[in-house]
Length: 300
Image (cartoon, rainbow, N blue to C red; front, side):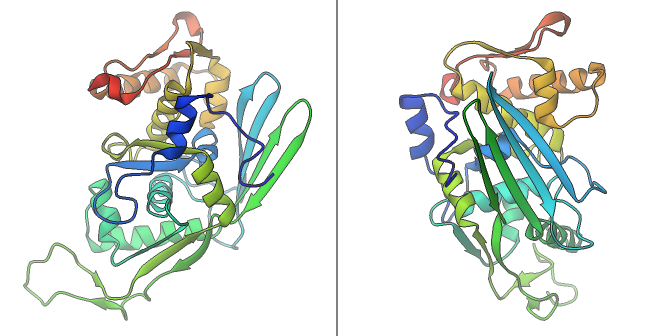
């Protein structure tokens, strides 16, 4: 399995081509208007909360006889798995590295501005912890069909470049008002694993940054919205996703469903406030979740 050749879940024709040809606006410089994530990470997302487990597996059904599983593992002793808003930072890195597999930038303020985050000293410490967790992350992807099984293993952030704490920073003079507590002299940088970059280029899922920004610190909502928007974009006809499949995708342990269903309904209503024409709905009496063909352009 190389670069995702064994997985082709996208629809055929113009929609499939449009996903491959649309680079994230502003991916090299300037402001971003959308994020792009590799499809595998949308279908099988990271954990929502900090886990004591060193490894977790997510499963997605791609067809009656086809199953995708993604295993996330922390390879560094004492470093937990990425969780929560770490997925937002990883999506931002993928977006910025979309063109050539690497990104260099002057200050973490670029990330903070993309998501409308506070730029205080505490946030710098939080993001450095996120980077540490992502740096310890290894991913194993397995695709199983009736005829074959294919596997890919990778370390998504192959290289990480960070200024050392304190020694590479300019602190504003006492009493001076500054939009940043730290102005970084030396550059930050990330190089994607070549296999992750190949997957990103081959199976990109571009989505509105303005929409996902509001869910940056709400990982359950981020995963649900990313999944629904992708499934609606990829749909060629109305499709019903069984409730158990949706729960499995989200990695939820709430099998009774009542509380999770209420939460997801509220999230869907929030999304429809921005995209009222989104053809997605929960069927009555636990009948699953229905999605239909759609593009964000339809709401413009």
